[in-house]
Length: 205
Image (tube, rainbow, N blue to C red; front, side, top):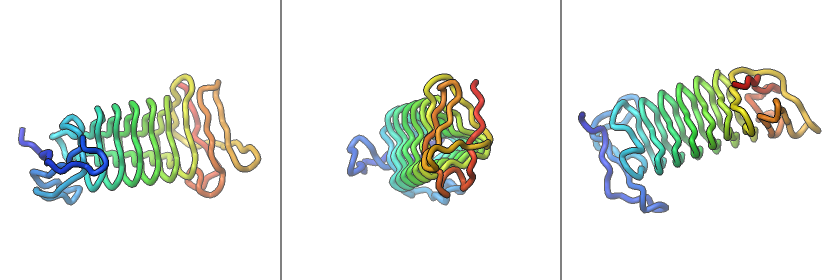
């Protein structure tokens, strides 16, 4: 197998355990040419040598986190712990992905979004703004979660794939629970959940 990249001796100024990568071949879909510098990794486990997956700009992937298939992590994103980014997923902006999370399919996570715990974001779902998906929540379908919304599971795993009605408390914060397994909280202004006054339909697995 021909290597796709090499690890240089250029250390990350904030974390000396991380080193920049350099492309050894062209990756056309990401406009990467052989010789171009990429982002930072801790060791080769963090970025597969197979496929066209890439870590670009000043993005950092470390710990046991892994980027594979045709996924891309770039700009100032951080992926760590045991997180996995694969398929055609994109993680960028100042997004933070950690814990045992999985981002896959054609999912997009960007801006200041955070995904952590055992959460999964997949299919064509987008998480952006200051939104968070945490713990035992699977977010999929074509949902776009933004603003300051938080999805966090506290019991059995919840699979969220489509939009239904949202519930309001004082016109400021929304709470929705199913058997105490899911709590959703956040502002209900025009920045919440794709400008719809709706919330994901929840199905306990």
